[in-house]
Image (tube, one colour):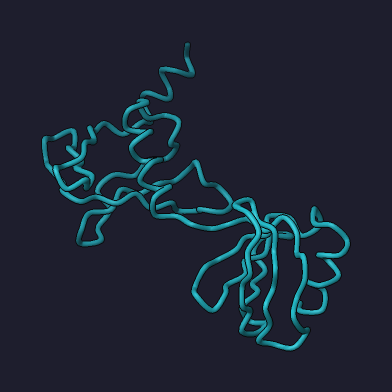
Length: 164
């Protein structure tokens, strides 16, 4: 029970609804209405459930949410639905093949959303993040995540070694 009280004390107080156009409307504790707010994760890869800012239409932070799970279910569900509709970052589970080890090259990859082809324009499109996490950008601007390089199969790691 003490943890519930502490969580309630940390959770920001606001209500969230959708207007007739489907945009989020945030009503702050003081009654201020903010039309068209957008949730933005502070750390989308390393801490996706923590640190979410509700940004106004003009780009200012209206509410800071330290932990998404501290919110009431209705607000949390609306924020998660909004984030899901805006975020698209497939996670690469396996590299099936590459057309050539020179760039640009076409990679066939198996992701958590199915198999696809991506075009890697250059080695600089592969960025190492914290630890063994990689972010790969294709020519269409889609970002693919490799959460743990060491968790990939030997074939996939061997291909990546040629580009890193």
